[in-house]
Image: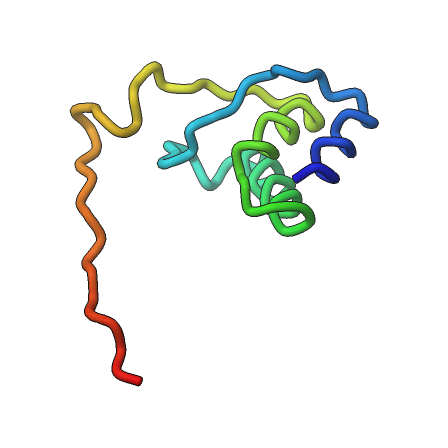
Length: 93
């Protein structure tokens, strides 16, 4: 992550530009602009770290795109119901 952050700094990306909560996305996959953004975002995740929060706002900035974030808590809202993962017993050795 340090290399990723330093790369973004060298490119002129401003610090403290916020992070997204990307637990779920509402998007139009047919949009060419969105396809470009999603591809660039995935490339950043593969190139640097699995931390999608670090790269999303950077890619939006770099591609000069806009997005709108919902003003909700992704963990506690009326639209999404979170369920615990099924816990399996350890596999026999």
